[in-house]
Length: 250
Ligand SMILES: Nc1ncnc2c1ncn2[C@@H]1O[C@H](COP(=O)(O)OP(=O)(O)OP(=O)(O)O)[C@@H](O)[C@H]1O
Image 1 (cartoon, rainbow, N blue to C red):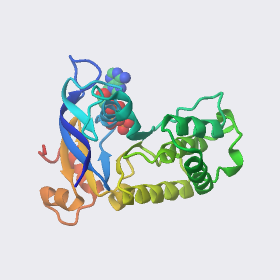
Image 2 (cartoon, protein in one colour):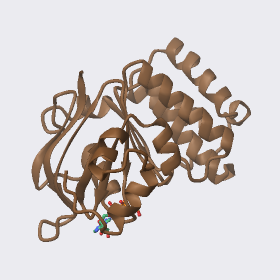
Image 3 (spheres, rainbow, N blue to C red):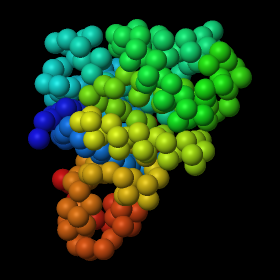
């Protein structure tokens, strides 16, 4: 298996005096969708900020495609696309301009841009909104623009932060289908979510974060084994961890 993302003994957060993440180690391989789950404040977004290179680890390291961000900043960033929980759009750019800006950043040629953007626009029902500015977009539409930009790039690694809240059912299904497709093409996807039933259905593996520590990680079957109940749902296991009913540290 080819490892796309490697997080090794990473401790981090916002101040060295009060680290939020403690000694996290996990990998993400090509063709895998991994669910990052945990209660509010568990450290999911902080983990994502470290992977994106917005925060520096206090200890340990993050590698994408074998490289740290210090070794090759531009190369590191080009390997990944990020769908944030809260859409970040340029208010002065139209939807089309957002797409073109992304295509430039990822150095897509015109033909690839045209093909991919036409398909994505159709999938998310935004074909008629190309010349609109974000002020006229609903919350879900703003979210879809971020999804379009990420999936336009076809990077090796997708970081998707809580994508389902705010999307309509067709949008959710389109996103899930796209993630399955990109996985099939060899991309790795790390998805943070509270929607455990969907995560259980679509993710190949899970990382359960609890108070900045990985409480458990693995396939659902591996986690069930550890939990001691071969039929427990992800939700049941997660609630037991969150309520302190288990003594796990992976
Ligand atoms: N900008 C910041 N400065 C200082 N501390 C922060 C900052 N952002 C988050 N934290 C703290 O880091 C810890 C982890 O927060 P984080 O946002 O990573 O959790 P999360 O798992 O993403 O939660 P949620 O499910 O609510 O999004 C919390 O204790 C939070 O208060």
